[in-house]
Length: 466
Image (cartoon, rainbow, N blue to C red; front, side, top):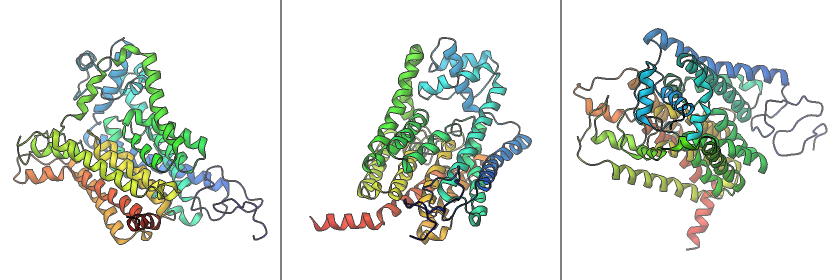
C-alpha cells in the first residue's frame, strides 16, 4: 500500500493528517479524496437552504397568485388531536365535523381522520396554537426537516468533492421542486415531517452495522405507522437476510401503536373504520391502482368515467393490486442473492417503496414526495457521480417517462380541465398520469435487479438444475 494511507478499510482511502469530515459518511461511494470539513459544512448548509427555498418560494408564489392554500388534510390532523384532548375518539367523523363547524373552519372532511392513533397523539402540541399558527409552524418544521434530510442524504450518497458541487446543488433544487413536496405543504400533509425518519432510517438500513441497521428500522417503522407504505421495505430486508433491520421496522411500528393505546385507550374507538380505505375512491388525488380502476367507472369532482357504473371496481382493483404485489415479490425473490449486497439492497428497498406507493389503496399524489427516497437510492448506487450516462438508454427513457407523468399530473392539478369538454374521457385517463410514471420508475428498478450478473447467474444455475 502506498505510504501515507492510514485506513485500509473498504471505501475511499483517507490520508494521514487529513481532517475528518463530520458530515460525509465513510461509506460514501463518491468521496475519493479528503475534503476540508469547513467546506463540506458550508455546502451542507447551502444544499439544505436550496431544498427548503424552492418549495418555500412556490408556497409564497401560490399564496400571492391564488390565495393561501386550503391545508385540507391538516384540518383532520388538528381536529383529531383536539378530540383526543376532549376525551373523544379522533375516528368519530361526525364529532370531527361538528367541532370544525364550532370553530368556524370548513374543509372537505372525506373519510375523516384516517391514520393510526400515534400520529393523532403526536399532533396534540399543535392544538395549543390557533389553526392558522399551527399549520404555519407545522409546515415550517416540515420544510426544515426536509431540507436537512436532503442535504444529509446528498452528502452520504455523493460525497463532498468540489467537482460535483454544481450537480449536488441541482439535485437539492430538484428535490425541492418535486411537485408533491409543495402539494404536501398546500394540503398540510405529514410527508415532510416524516422525512428524517424515512430518509435517515433508510441510510442506516443500507450502510449500518447490525445495531445501526436495527435503529434505522425503528425509524422506518415509525414512519410506517403514519404512512403505512414504508413498511413494505421489510420485504427486501428479509430476503436479503437483514433480519435485525426488518425486526426494527416491525418493532418501531408495533411499539408506537402499543404506547399510543396505553396513553389514550379511549381514542382507538371507531378505528375499525380505517377499513374504508379499501373502498373505491375516484378522487383525482388518489394516484394508485384503486384510483385508476375507480375512475374508469365512477365519477369524481374532476373526471367523467369511461364506462359509467359498468362494474363494481372493488374486485378488479383488489385483483390488480394483489397481482402487482406478487409480481414485485417475484422480482425481489429472483434477485434475493443480490439483495445481500449493498447495491442490490438499495435497489430492492427502492423498488419495494415504489410498489407500495402504486398499490396503496388510497395513495394520494402528495404521498409521492416519498418517491424521492427510491430515486435517491437509485442514484446513490448506480450514479454516485450524478452522471446519468451510467444508465442504459432504456432506463433513461423510463426515467423521463416518470418525470413526464409527474409533470402532466401537476398541470392537471393546477389547471383542472372542464368535465364538459369533448375529450373528458381522455382527461380521465390522463388523471392517472403519475401512476404511469411510477410504473415506469418501477420498471427501472426491476431491470437493474434482474439484469445484474449475480441475478442472471442464479437464474442460469436454477434453469440448468431443473
